[in-house]
Amino acid sequence: MGNINPFVIFMASIFTNNMILANFLGMCSFIAVSREIKTAWGLGQAVTFVLTGTSIINYLIYHYILVPFGLEYLRFIVFIILIAAFVQLVEMIVERYVPTLYYSLGIFLPLITVNCAILGVSLFMIIREYTLIQSAAFGIGSGLGWTLAIVALAGIRQKIKNAPIPKGLEGAGITLIITGLMALAFIGFSGIVNVQ
Amino acid sequence: MAEIVQTVLIITGISGSLALVLTLANLYIANYGECKIVINNDKELVVDGGSSLLSTLNEQELFLPSACGGKGTCGLCTCKILEGGGPVLPTETPFFTKDELADNMRLSCQVKVKQDMKLSIPEDLLNARKYEAVVEFIKDETKTIKLLRFKITDGQEVDFKAGQYVQLLAPPYPGNPESVYRAYSVASSAKEKNAIELIIGYVEEGLVTTYVHQHLSEGDEVSFNGPFGDFYLRDSDAEIILVAIGTGIAPIRSILYQMKDEQIQRKATFFFGARTQKDLVCAEEMYAFEKSIPNFHFRPVLSREPDDSGWEGDRGRVTDSIQTYIEEGIDQEAYMCGSPVMIESAVIELKKKKIPEERIFYDEFG
Image (cartoon, rainbow over all chains, first blue to last red):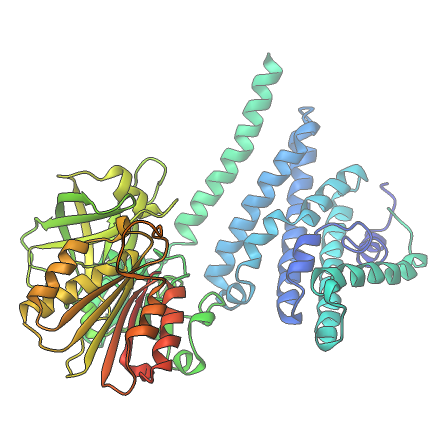
């Protein structure tokens, strides 16, 4: 897969292969933190940043440490350890140097550790045999795509706050239905680019 | 074989280097150096930054009340941060009204010390001290409630108002790696300056209650700090209504000692709710108070006493007793201690009896 333009991968991971709406990864925080646009936007920023960082570092560790020693099967545990450590480090740096961002993200920052979209990106880039540049583009694009999806969902949820939703569907129920409709709508983009 | 060693080494190397990076980051990035805290424009403390304001003040022997031990759930450790507190966190907002937030009220367990700060703390909280003591005796009042007496060993005298509470420290014990504080009302007379008594019930999985009930024995060393709280007998001529359930008897017992010591003539009735006769904590003492306090009546009320037990006292809940015995139109004050549910329903009953809200004082279990 060494011949796809990184920009194409970037666009594809935002629209046609959106982490949430095409792969349904990172659903937990997607549903839990989409009540308000402001917090959704904050979490989106944090996810994008962590995705970019971890996809690059995981790429380097995988190709320069695990592959030479034939330890590919350890990638799950190594990736998870690295994501956890990276989030911790980011938390400390942000708290120290950008306190305003730290306070606006609050508990969402440590929550990212267990967001499966992050692990998903690292694993996909290995399976799809991306190069370093492609992986970086894939990481940034996936983060932006995730942000786009969660902010859009938060917008819709704010709009329907006062709508007469059937009692049994309130909360998570209607959110999952909306997510499904959004996924269908995003299929409309699939004609633009078609890469895996 | 070599493969196994190699794999282990590589995994160890990766996690080790990540741990090293984090440790270094903790040392250099999360290190806020020395910070200066000025309290009430008067007292100046120089502390190491980086941890929460509550624990930083604790290390400086300055004890803000806290029932949850710094988890941000009890909302007691409030103080005014005039400078250097940073923005208000989402974990703090539920505990304050808009006016309080505008007045710089914060939860000290949620605020980290990262820079020089200016605080305003009520003077009487600054009087809270730390005391070292030994367990003089432990008495089983009921199956799940113990009366403990702590003798202060560090030469200090404890000065509190009857009804106030102290915070007992449970050091780390098997099953609980961290030391925690929990609040308990003092049950003994305020006249005693070198010992206190606490009444502590067992709560399943409660960190400090487990420590007290399963790990503490006579002669052990303990430490507590205090006193705190604004639950004490107000000076007036009104009739006194006392209400408690279970271990809520503790502050009431202390108040009764005060009434006995000062021979207070005000008419007083104590409604004490329990399940059965066996659960009536300190009952003999209460009946004795009827003789030693001029106008005091003890009215226990039982909710689960078997019908054929020969119990001739009241049955039901404390709210039933309030309905039955309290008369409207008399100048009276209520003092209550117990679970939030009991307090809430008792306040409703007392209001029905036309007792104004500002004359109902209570101390809720955290």
